[in-house]
Length: 335
Image (cartoon, rainbow, N blue to C red; front, side, top):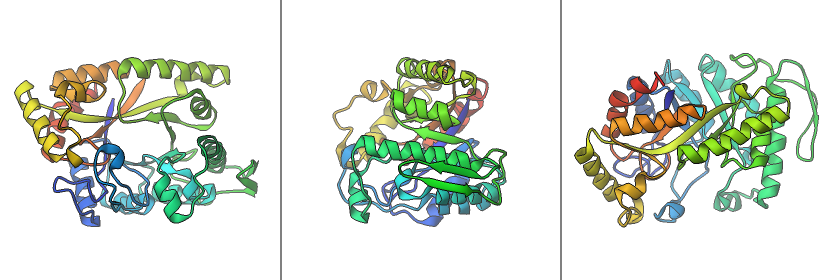
């Protein structure tokens, strides 16, 4: 199993809680690569507040994912680079494909395109995007994923859907990866999303709290859907992101959790026990975390993406990455 990192790239993302700068993001990416992480991932928000995570509703700044990943592709040599996930309503599929192709070429074929429907209504309203209902956003996502998959193929694409129309459109130059970068469709895993993954995606990604048992049920369903659609179920890839906290032993884990509680925005963990926080996350001693990773590997998960704080795309303590590097990554590679 590979281990990725949800890269810090917001004002709230760092141990001192801000602000975001290009230099800080580049340093975090370099640290992740040096520590042996297999991939780094950037999310896609025009701004983001922490109200849903127990923090303030003050908008926090962020870097744009494709330009940031393009720059990081020249600042790294090995680690894979991905969006987790690109918000499909923000970009026409043609632009999404050209941006993805650029990052893939710059990185020598190290780019993964995660794509989703979007959920943060406040940024849609602020910038004049039509938020609509869940069904409307998902229908647009279906069209967008189909369009991106078509444009990644070598032959010209013709497509006529309610939201996307192509006539003999093509993407030149082609991406570095044959067939284009992997397309990861992000979401919780309802049947409609799983049908989209089976039809046009390389794989399914889901975050940030899952138990192996709950994930196994949805992964099994995904394979059933793929088989019913005529796709070899073994070709459908799986990745998961989890909030992660590893301690060298039980005492160290408890100390690290107290530090995380003190860091957590808005005191959101003050009344949450370590046991409660760990229930559907990757939390524990190295052996406990490796046992949980092994359980996810049994469901078919090929990559675990570490969220190294109590909110996504943040690192509350740089030493949290050190222990993952030393105690988790080498052993996980054997799963």
